[in-house]
Image 1 (cartoon, rainbow, N blue to C red):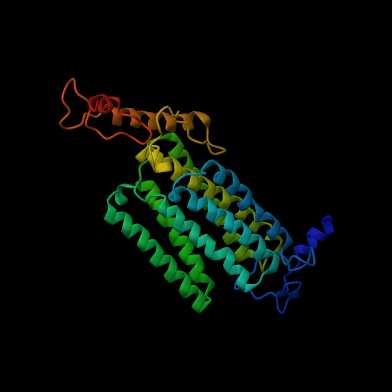
Image 2 (tube, rainbow, N blue to C red; image 1 turned 120 degrees about the horizontal axis):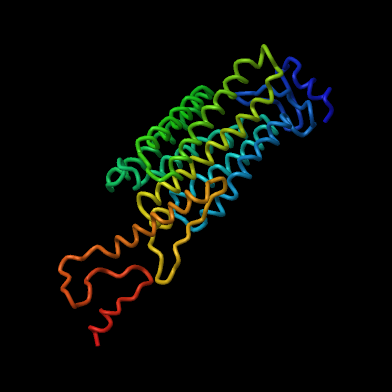
Length: 317
């Protein structure tokens, strides 16, 4: 692309009655990049291309968390769908495709909240876990239905913002102690603030300064970075609070070495601290005496999955 072409994209927008390859531009919200100015098949070529960052960020997360509990994997799948939906939305700028971008964004927030399911001090009991899950589903469903009915874009923005604030609040109140958790949460909060600044700048300055159109791709990059680190935080926090069961839902079998997958961009030493904490938790659980245990006799504690109870087998002979 020539420099002159990039300058042309900064010319005042003429969005009224724009019709392109995918039909009329009828999305509830449009962005500063001129429509169909770069390629006849892309309403917003650069914004669509920049949306791939969400897909690329989700793939290593999905690989690292393969086989883990849904509270961990849900967010990574949502991030992947957000990316696919955003690529399609910016390519077409159609209302129906816009929903494939925005509804998964709300689902991503819902999945981030579920990362606290059973691990946060406020969700330890079965009742509190049910409240978190059902409450999230009710709010997500209600907000989505209201948005579809009213088609007020501000409802989506407000709902997304409140959801982000709820995730940040619970994350701060979690008072994580491991450095990997603290680092991930700090990065998530920092980058979502930076991303929102770029979002608001493009929205409010677009008419007066169309040259700010590249700022939306900075929103893509930094909001994706924030989502990535928030999902890393959920993964590490569940391990910190629940041990390896927080990630996999069960204890490792006999002879299995405890090695947790390390997400990219997390310092190796801090990841090793998480593994050490998980191993210490297993050791402490092994060392806890069981009520009714008699010295010199087999332990009455139940065996872990994949572990044999030799004393029990000897007693049965």
